[in-house]
Image (cartoon, rainbow, N blue to C red; front, top):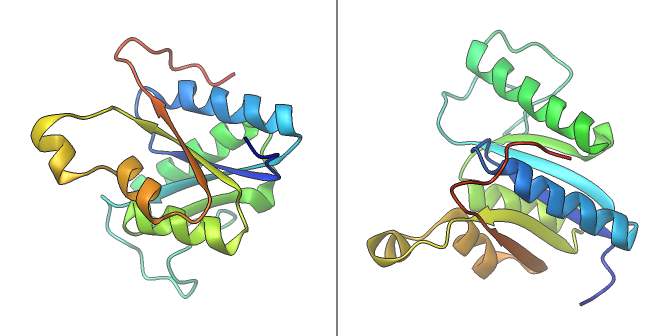
Length: 153
């Protein structure tokens, strides 16, 4: 395993994010690496913004659902001690946006959750599978179990 300098945690606010976040935080401590966090919105209408697909975290959008997502990201990032400059809320296709931010920010390791799908779900793919195949850096897919805790740290 390489010495990682920059780790990107991808969260989707499922009930298992705490498990994935703890793993990412432990790795960032072990390697004394920057920890960044990304959440990709793919299921709410995109507000008209002059900022492109990256949604500014320091402005009120006026969209209730978007504000809820921003608040969740800020709370999670605060709990993990993620610097404000390393937080991204992005609208788009999750695997594409995660890989794009990872490349732009020179991330060494992407950490995200995976449910280890089988059968038809496996054939249809998942965000973790797509990131694994598209990323130019290492990817850690944390296998998720149904009884994992929601706590972050």
